[in-house]
Length: 288
Length: 172
Image (cartoon, rainbow over all chains, first blue to last red):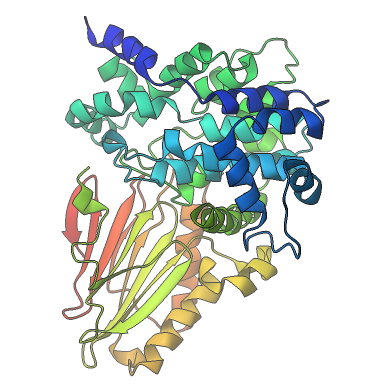
């Protein structure tokens, strides 16, 4: 088998996304989901139910009474915030390991992914995206391809590094030249295998090259998701959140900021919020 | 890519300075090394007084606290204009003197082909130069710009500052 076939085969060997996570993704995708729908997904997962109740009763939320049931938890905290926290905590099994090829110690890819998810959420609010629900998940999963490509990048690191540092290729361009795939393409393959929505797959596929995302229609309403994941990723890389061997060696697409009338000051404000919220999420994750 | 790049060699003697964080210490105390990881567009600043062997390190992420005064109140080390005075005052408190301070700077990376839109790195560096110029502080060594992720270390006993990146390790 050649390397390209090897990588595709590796996509198949990665354990499937946790069943509860997949079902939560489906519920989240539907703007008409009710609290009962969400409770229905979580209640069958004992470990998750326990985690949710521990989260709600943790110092992080500072509630003055004890929460004993899932529905109570949802009412007290609001479903979106709680679901985001659950997703963030849940994703650590998938994203928490060391990614040697990318020079990321344990926890760093998870921290980057949660940072991008939080930034996506804030950007969605700032740009008034009509349905912001998929943004958090898109941010959380954008780099999932790195988990598969990691060992291949580690094996060919010298060649990739030469292309990046001496010939000034972007890191994902060098991945494609050396391995046949970059982490965005591999992430999209994985997302397809997990039956994630077409919108999520596009965000993962084009998060370093939003200008190349083929629009579905000339006035593509979904384009905003790809653009905002790109911006959130760039922002977190600049802030050094889970930045690894790839550094900031990615192409800049300056049109994205102007398309949403965002300024550098807006980005900096969002960055300050992301870091403050990330510190809270990390504290909460360590308490739960 | 090795673990050693990310983990302190002896955790009891090293102190990690997080993003939006600072620390000062004496060279003969419990902490012998200050280290900060993952400097992208953020800036790491070290100060060291060779006579009293007092050193400090700041890892700030944004140039100007006026964008978010409440965040600056909660965490002044997040911004250059509120973080730098903290670092210097804390070093003076431990006996360091301004005229003897050796100041070094690292970070301020940018994306490839950036023409000034995503310029947090450049703005972080320029405000530092401005604040230093106003206060008569000289930079003795620096490793800034490019698209690298950097690790910065200050040896509190010798004052040596080393920068590790994918381009190798250098003393500045």
